[in-house]
Image 1 (tube, rainbow, N blue to C red):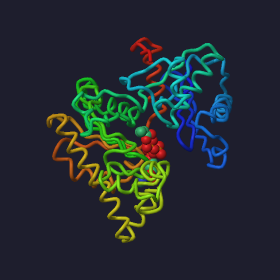
Image 2 (spheres, rainbow, N blue to C red):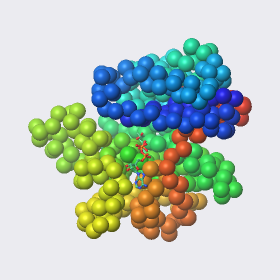
Image 3 (cartoon, rainbow, N blue to C red):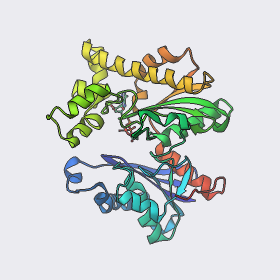
Image 4 (cartoon, rainbow, N blue to C red):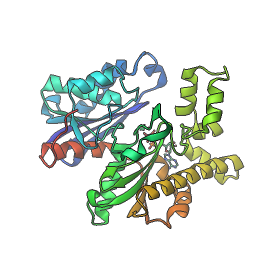
Length: 352
Ligand SMILES: Nc1ncnc2c1ncn2[C@@H]1O[C@H](COP(=O)(O)OP(=O)(O)OP(=O)(O)O)[C@@H](O)[C@H]1O
Ligand SMILES: CCCC(=O)O
């Protein structure tokens, strides 16, 4: 079964060709900001990025007409459960209109849909950012106008959680895990027997991350919004793109910050320690969601490559459960396997 995998990120498009479970090609196309700034809206980047996808297929020695299916990372959709979904008209309409917000992964299903109609093959998304498996009790924020929204690194978290559960000779659906994805944003989620029953919204709640503030002191935030110094757009940028490590250190390169900390720069060390401390606190909170029944705590994502950061978190949380570190992300593989489960009829595709 020949599967084309597309994972659009804010500054890159990752593409893979899978023959069954075997990866035949993995390619990351980096897009410079000058190129992307030509497009007003995210959805306008569609043709440009799809061109790169077509080139990658040729580069891999495949013909588009050889493909059995296309699968892409899904983005900000209406709240849906985890799993594999068929790309359909309603989904594409919501994404094109950014009905639930802008996110680079919104482009995934738009591109997959175009190839679906051109090649007459099935198109899927798997475990999108918008997966919502919240317990009702997790939805209340404390202000009736503001419901908590589930937005997280579901794809990588669920894929790594399946793998860790298997290592423990359990099914994902029998295990209780707390998964921390440490990337440009951070997600900390309790996975209770295969359901992500809570998670900090990785865009604006929980620990601060490379570029995001996470939860902020509400009253001070309100005052800053009304200070007259910033427009709404600027405030959103401060929270989502210019917060966290970037706000304190002026860089999003965590390797560089770690080097500075190692050379004795106090501020760099304090920032890394504070971020690790906040992640550990969030794990503690999520352990209460699982009522203390935690089989393992999993640390994954780009920053899990740092033994300094994962070590700091581990020290504070290992009293709760064994800690497993799975650095990096395996989103391309997770997408291919999600499509394959449906193509081999192990799972039924859900309808959006
Ligand atoms: N060896 C490393 N040591 C420390 N930090 C690292 C290392 N490798 C990558 N990182 C950091 O990991 C972060 C990127 O993680 P990742 O690749 O998971 O993020 P992303 O794909 O940009 O965003 P997200 O995971 O939020 O979708 C960057 O801040 C990067 O500096
Ligand atoms: C919103 C969480 C997912 C991401 O940051 O990419």
